[in-house]
Image 1 (cartoon, rainbow, N blue to C red):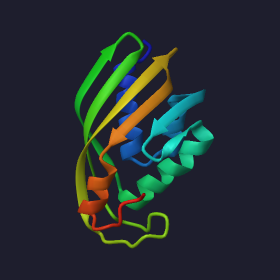
Image 2 (image 1 turned 180 degrees about the vertical axis):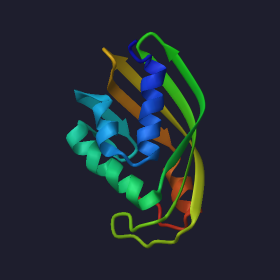
Image 3 (image 1 turned 45 degrees about the horizontal axis):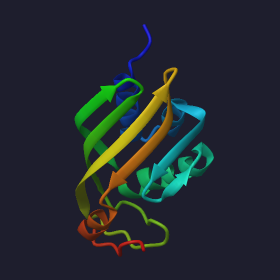
Length: 134
């Protein structure tokens, strides 16, 4: 039985929470586009960014709402993490953060075709005692 679109997004969250970049990328179509607060691009652009975020902030996404209609899924999370490694040359504070985050997925044929993400990165950095990227 093929996975539902909600199950694919849940697998995305699980892969992200486990830092499994190979499993994460496997959920996306080869020509997928990912749009986020640090920019947009194909998998070759976003995979290193995801790796950096996972390493530097030990991110954990907790799904609060997951809504699906046709080929779209919207997820609302609480994103938690901490400053655990230097992000782009900045200091490491070991301070935690928790912010709301949302992602919108467009899927087709069992793969994510596009993903848009939004989170309050300024609040995230302030909670960790880091300078807000500008």
